[in-house]
Length: 68
Image (cartoon, rainbow, N blue to C red; front, side, top):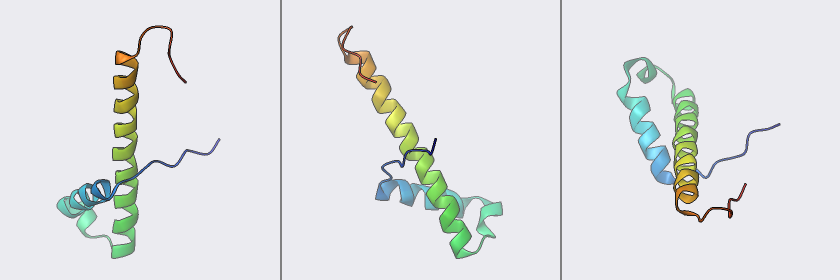
């Protein structure tokens, strides 16, 4: 089953690029590879935001109205 695409925001990409540029081993990557790593990190940020949203939604929904 293929992974679902995440809603990556421009802020996710900015934060991910900052992570890539701040870690010494990743600074040695060429531009294309660094951008690929940044996009993967941005996907992780988007997944974390999605999971947080689902947890918050589940916490405040009345019992019996759970959605998949």
